[in-house]
Length: 83
Image (cartoon, rainbow, N blue to C red):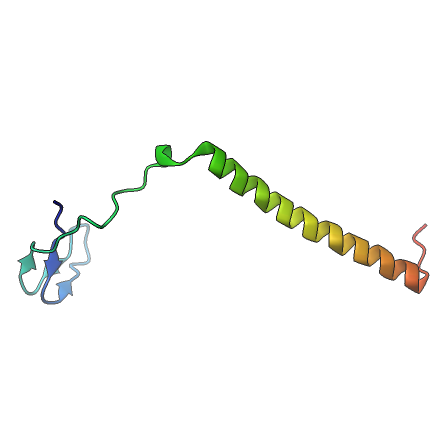
């Protein structure tokens, strides 16, 4: 079981590299077993990361292609020629 220290009063910042001090008392009776641990990049699935990364490119690319197609249609309607 893990515990998280909490302050029952105000946290006073000392302004230096030291941790803040508690104006009240520190309590350690809070169960923190549901709080996840520190982030570790080795826990990421490479296939899921690659699929999320590539789907972002597909979304951006499809919007870009639609925009270019609309611009070409509007140019054809207006009769603009870019020679």
